[in-house]
Length: 607
Ligand code: F6R
Image (cartoon, rainbow, N blue to C red; front, side, top):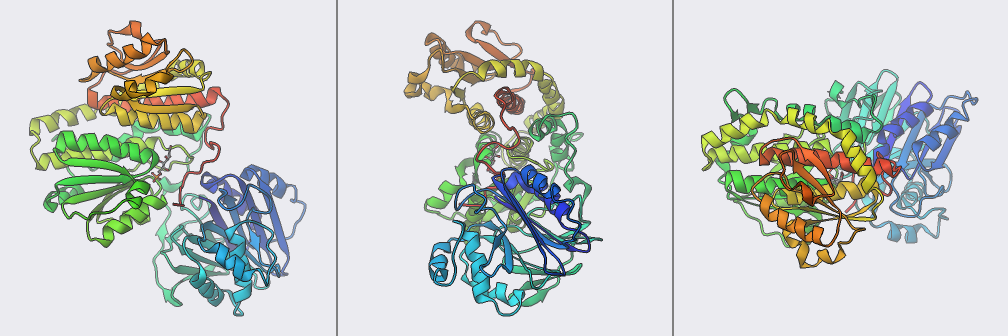
């Protein structure tokens, strides 16, 4: 949450900073600001409440100012401390108007620090960041590096900071604990960013800072320090895959990412499944065979949690291994009983989810086995875990996770089949599943072709204020994920239940104004779920059914979204994909800002 971007070089920083913020806007879009300085100690400061586009217009309006500002820092905000106001917008400034600062994270002891600093400074905002700006002034040693070392000692928890001193232009100091900070180099200078993707269009190489490290950028050079000592770290080349694709003919990145799903599946299995031999072939998964695991615990949040729940069914069904999925914040708030026979699996698209990372630290502190499934290459979870596989979904640009959830489910399926290979699963069953999987991208492409019909149905359902989403077994977490996506994108109130559970209370809400979505393709619980649907129909609740094309109970539903004819297992993937289209078009019908849903940000970096 919150994105920071900075540039130091020999050209004007303003356009670069605004473009960098556009790429980081998924981290928060409440307000944005930039500050640039130059050799003559002149300052360019601009802030805007709202989107980066509002800031961009203000900056464009100053294009007649031909002054060059070659050192600059920038920020896009997701409000935590204080409302969405101009005063709370970063960059923040010290009382002597010398030090400017942008911050991603939360300073947990900011109230104590503020109380301590109040005799010396007047505060204009409610933010924790302004406190750090004032602290820099109070602790100033004569230069920024040692000042920031002293400041860091006073701060409790989470920050990545970029700081400039008006009296010392041509220099930026960045420091991080927990929140990400990445340095990029290009011919025209050195950049700082909250992620690699925002650097991809501007820089050639990048270096990820570790916790407690500091970067000092002077001119076009930078040095990294840990506890005052210089650290040597090789930089990496920015890959083509880290660049953000053009939107093309799609109306939102969310839509584009849903249509990317068939190709994502091929990336996920590449080098991991041998379709000729019909077996899972992956060294990381093979290594799990030697661990003598008896249980699996999957820890994650939001959509990744639902992916974990679906994975639980795979592990129980195919590997015959106990598996439970738990929301990471609940894991943190409960008693941890370490178990050397459990494999703790952490799922996170972004790698930045605070609760997931904290959970992993707790598990690792007890020397238990950890496995990370992460999308962002080089991320901390990936480096912290004993074992791991990337979900290889490609960059997810905006807030709603779609193609990555499918990729996570796919990785969990491969893990379950691999462990099944080692345990009791029949080779013929594995071969049959793998033969089927080869068809999945085609089946999903087929499901996506139904977009015009789904759009029509979504328009009809956009008039409702509330909806239930039902499923059983595999389709229970699928229903949870579908409800989450509908809420997040359309702001319609959607609740998911196990279809069994509806009559234990929620059925009281069903009426002509309260529709129910049901996932019930032709599968082992088809008939039982029909009974639940009948209970809804008897109360005149409209029913939107995600069904198989071969369905025989057409009289029961009000509307239907047909899933391509597949096995039960593959319909988990087609059901997820079509539910994403439904949520997208529901939101579109209501005129929502699909890529930037209200109140949200993609990276949830606070507990
Ligand atoms: C919903 C969504 C969120 C994330 C959740 C966890 O569309 O994107 O619910 O799934 O915030 O994020 P990661 O997977 O990055 O840990």
